[in-house]
Image 1 (cartoon, one colour):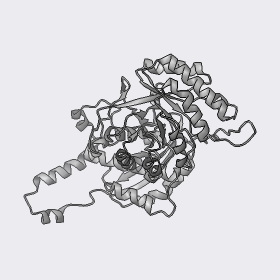
Image 2 (cartoon, one colour):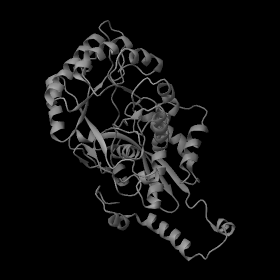
Image 3 (tube, rainbow, N blue to C red):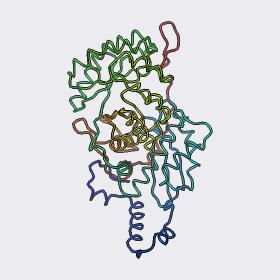
Image 4 (cartoon, rainbow, N blue to C red):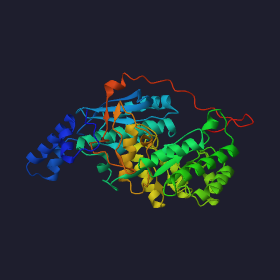
Length: 432
């Protein structure tokens, strides 16, 4: 296992490099140094491509730090192993099953061909898209980048073009069955140096299986007012709507929220019809955000080209991984849109989100649930270090995390509970 330390020096990094990766690198360097000057044609004949091959790929269904998780392990013939995360708390069995379908595609392939294997996993399948496919491809993509970073002895962000920024501003969450409880938690986050906070109301209504647009809007404003009063005007507040509202109620919420100057309104309406965002966009000047339920660059296309929102929320565990997030970022950059990566998973997904956020130029903020409390880890570690509201780079090779596979096998996956089954006041089905 690699050292559990986010503050590894460059000298310590080389010393702590995994044995397989170090020997592999040493062999490559020695061959390059010892070889006499040759023509390009002669060199190309002797060069070994691929230098590695994938010999196994398997999903891991387990429980990390008490929470269900879905991972993938990809092993190479030189002993370098990569890990990725496909955790989707709402479709865990589907994500796990999709990994079982996709992993055989990888066997015998060159793990350095990250883009080729992404295309293979996506385009060699007749049915494409959706949360299960997005999660599985994301995990495979992460694991391939993890392997490549370990092979070259550098963090993944170096392979993505290097640091576009030296640190990433993060935001935490608050919950609570009352506005007073949410405000108290917000003050705690601010005391820890967090400068942006996301919240949603209607937890008390969730507890009784109720969603009513009017009641939810009223409670959202109640929470927003209480939190703003508690933390002052210098803290950015993210008003999360969870995709529950119809456009008319999202517009009503935005109008009532204006005096409290939220940083943005996240997921103001449901996700099935992006064009419906046009109505909300036309009736408010407040920044809008959406995207955690988009599963590829194609899902983002309509929202981006129509400038429906200000911020996009791709999740590296769902949108197609690091490779796809880089493309979504470039697509958004053309339209002067910024990214705020969604991230509600453990250290593997968090690491992937951080590497993306460090390397993609138009990222302004990153979700960081591990700052809410003292984050626990057992199978995977570490979480990034946060100083004065900013996450610092992970410095170890690859994704910069360690994975205790032996421990994972002792942590059984727990049968997930049902999502809240929300009804309206009239007994009709409502969105969660």
